[in-house]
Image 1 (cartoon, helix red, strand yellow):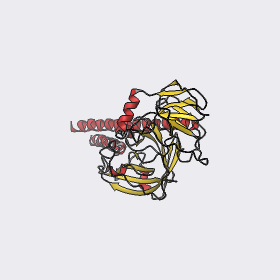
Image 2 (tube, helix red, strand yellow):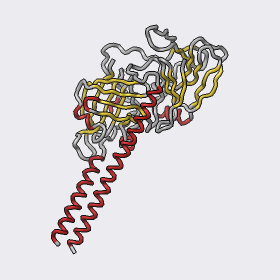
Image 3 (cartoon, one colour):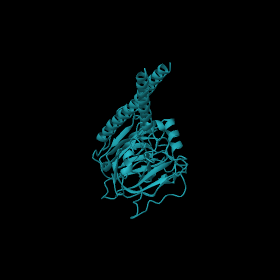
Image 4 (cartoon, helix red, strand yellow):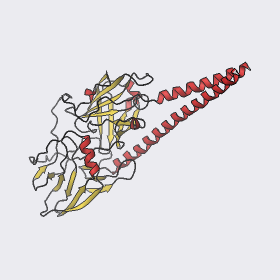
Length: 181
Length: 198
């Protein structure tokens, strides 16, 4: 069974942390409201929102096994705008996906997802990378990448050097002035 | 008269130098405070997670929403060169002033794709100059710890963003300025490519 808690207030914005034995979910939503479904399922059902292709999934609803009531997550408009702005160009999402059988040896819990209609979909499961795959770069540059590499020349050293030189110069000038007198 | 002017000039230089050193001290203090606060937050998030000692690849069902600029991403550590720095989202000068930054538009640590992390060469990423192939890089996030192995090191122009292009498998790219001893805006970028350990 999953548990739900909120993170402490700090520099990070509040988020919900779902922690199951095998399935941690980190959700940056502030609001969760009750949701209802006609027929309970025997498995945990997780619904995802439509998001731009390539961006992380956003939870829409969570139903526990056997319960009519679940939790629906409400994202603020700014969250959606941020996600849309920061991610890849929008590609229409598929309306269904093949059901994936959970491997018994795998440590993940049997979660299936559905989207809008009562169509059971598979959890977003990246296929296992083939052996010895080289880190081939994708030819097309993502639109979200910066035009240039970040400016990483800090001014820490310059400030320290500048201050030291000024101090040395000042003391030298004062000593020279007092010595002449 | 000249002596007096010289004396006042010397005093002005001392005041200017003291202000510069005070500025340097305040920057160091802000950096240290941010690092401590973010480190505590990460430890707290990990403690609440399902696997505090989590040292495994991502589970199959994981949902991570991208952090906003300035929010915590994780901690990067390279044990051999004694590098340890908190990583915040974004690579703006303000963020890079207090932490390492996760470059916008790149993958999050542990996920498939190319994760880009940048930091100043005269603070957090100064030890990168001692990095060698096969060194281990550890990135700790609230959802797991991911280990990478240094694969290649190269020096490129700042306009060469191809080093950040997405990759088919999880990869980490570290970016800092080069040469390390250059004073002012450095003309090149020091790039470290690392592959995630299976």
